[in-house]
Image 1 (tube, rainbow, N blue to C red):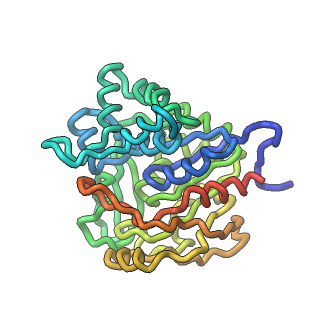
Image 2: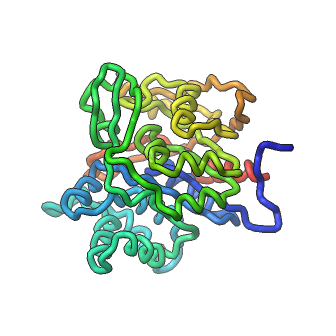
Length: 338
């Protein structure tokens, strides 16, 4: 009997993406073009950039990762298309507002009007007419911390993502404080899934925070779905400095508590102009040292985008220059359902 659980071809397959940030955005954008029942389970541990202000000034949980998923799944035509552009708009002027996104402010205002951030998220889905569901992994107000090999403990996600310490020191473990409880919707989505997609995205700040939430590892341990891990294109200073593909997989499986079924690996080269910029931050392409059947299945293909990504001048955060191509990645993921 095959170890891979594939859906009955007479019904629409259920695909669940777990992660956050631009990596999950790219995966969802590619997948929404296919006849699948899509759900995104999104980290709620972000504390940098406009999210820090959302948490500190509005007393709300971070919304940037949710916003990006909404935009990825939104209708791009007509009035909804205009709303999609508005949700991605980042203010570059205005004292106290520069650096904030319209989408984050919209959801903060809606939470105030409706009296619930949970209800604001539900109503925003209707405004953007998204294809699929976006589910916060937890509504617990928690922070991500990391303990490094030299004994240093860093609290808050943004200080892990953009380290003020020596980013060459490896992370020994990450944890949430206080512990967080998974939303029932997230647990249900995992249980009903045919295919679960982990990543791409920053390993310790976008992907693993979801796996630290009580209930998520347990749900993944029990699921009959095929679990696919999308390997990152580049290492990340402060998180995965000098990590090979095997190192990424070992760290991921430590927090899942089981092996993934399939690993998607980009087999194409990265543009030299991007590599030169990454090198200044001690970041290089992830070395593919994976071996077929150990105990996962490997799928290697060209999945890299050809565009070097820019960013808004008012965006204070460091962003990836090269990303997976949404069309190529969507096709690769769908190949796992054949």
